[in-house]
Image 1 (cartoon, rainbow, N blue to C red):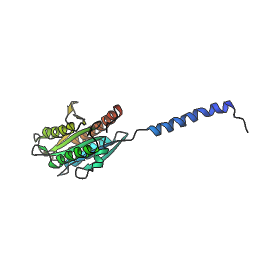
Image 2 (spheres, rainbow, N blue to C red):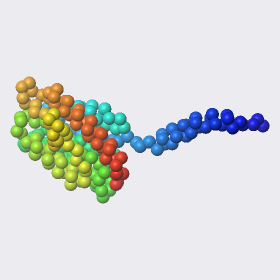
Image 3 (cartoon, one colour):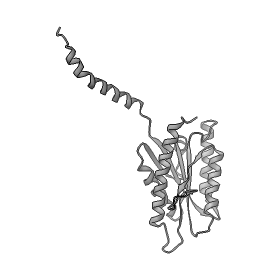
Image 4 (cartoon, helix red, strand yellow):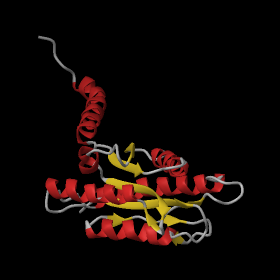
Length: 209
C-alpha cells in the first residue's frame, strides 16, 4: 500500500476544505423570496404599472416574482407569498370591487393556513386614477388597513423628492392620457424597494406560519 506523504496532504487540504464549504453553503442556501403581484385592470393602465413593479422587483437577486390578475391568483399563490403587492384602479373614490374581493380571499386563504395570517410577510399597494383628485389616497389606505388587520408589514414607496409615499400611483386622464414614463420609473423603483425590504425582513425574523 503506497504511503501518503504529509506534503501531499497539505497541498490537497485547501481544496478539500473549499469543496466542503461550498457544499455546505449550497445545502443551507435560503429559498428565493416569493412575491405575488396581483392586480385588477379595466383599461390596461393598472396592468402596465404592475409590469413595471415586476421589472423593478426582478432586478433584486434572490426573489421569485408571480404576476397575476386578481381573479387568477390562487390560494396557493397567496399562502406561498412572502410579500403581496396589490394594484387597483380607483373606482368611486376607492379600490375596485375586484381588488376588494382579492383582499377577502387573502384573509380567507391565510386564515385557513393558520392563525397568524400575514405575520412575517410584507404587503403594499399601487393604484391608477383618471384625475389628480380621484380618491387615490382613500383607495390605498383601504387596502393598507386590510393588510394591517391581517398582520402584514406595510412597505411604502419613495417619491422623486425623496419623501415616503403610500405607494406608486398614475394619473391616466392627463394629456397625453395613459401611464407616463415617469409613472413607470416610479413603479420600477418601488418594485426594487419592495423586493429588497421583503428579503431583509425575512432574513431578520423567521416568519411565524
